[in-house]
Length: 130
Image (cartoon, rainbow, N blue to C red; front, side, top):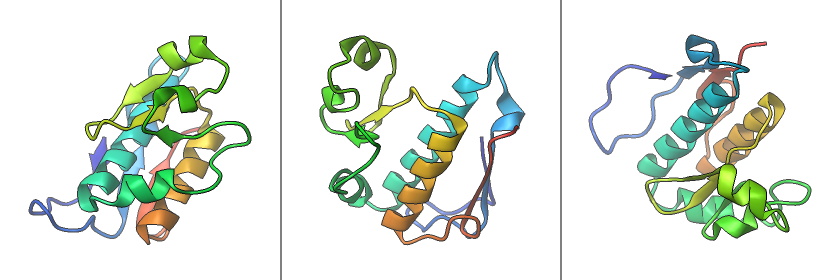
């Protein structure tokens, strides 16, 4: 799903990384939104070993929950049903909440860009479809 020129391992993400959810729409499109989000977060974590620690340390993620956490119960406080169904474990062991809308995916990626020191819309571009 990540479309960019090949980079040698360990190098920074190239400018203009392009992601397109519309390339993999399934059902209501929610699954592909998660794939895009997971792809971006994993790529940024691969690029910088401190990225996830810095994202998690942000004082605020969403209105009532965290988007990324070490403990998946922090993703959906008071909602164990959502914790079980909508938590994705990243390769690093961190957890990512995936019960998200297009607007939330874009917001999370914008936050991730800020943490990573990248420019949303320039260094990383996404197309989440309609």
